[in-house]
Length: 337
Image (cartoon, rainbow, N blue to C red):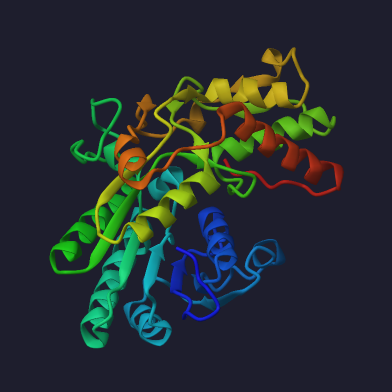
């Protein structure tokens, strides 16, 4: 959808605008001439985040506060809502399952209810795109998964995303155009350092610069369907333009192991003899983790004309190059466990 000089630009509201997907989506919508409003946590006001949000009106609030959420929807009066906010770490969800459920589940209920109220009171359709997750299928034996795969989470994070996923379907039945973007793992240099992928690329960059000796990981045999974050943001934009609520898997349809990611990272750094630099620590293995996660994106390809553009090695290389630039500039990349 494009906006010309004589038309009123669409109004978008992005929750979690300070995250990886939120910043890419904000940039995309601003480039299309949209009126973009973003919601993020009160502590997400650091320059590394704000540099991506030029042209975005940013609000700082707790997305799980129903009163604040209702006020934001009423004041912004969005045509499109992209719900990306939430705790996105499976590991973190095991440390604090109650907060994870509140932030990921309660926030969806508050937002969907506010959007339905806004739609009914204004008479103007509100389109909602919700960031669901492949983790809702973590306990499934079906591979690759489709939109019809039974939901079977194995972590508090997966359960909280299953709640938001189901709520979208429930509110869709009430007349709200809600879509679930079932997102498989997607990476970029903006991926938080608490994720294993950035832990790998930042460590490899530090090793290549002579500032770190080894990389320590948990189970490296786990296989994931890894894509490029800007591609997945494009898919969510296409869902909004689709005009009707539905569920879509966003994935590449291919899986690689964590060790494959490690190998690609060292290759990108120009280190060929790296096997002795990788150590294993069983304490870093998550309590319950599916061995393989692959999504079938056929529906998105057919109905949304969406395709992923970046290959696996290019994704890893871009992250290593970014982290090496940080190391060379004297920045210390703070990595999670």
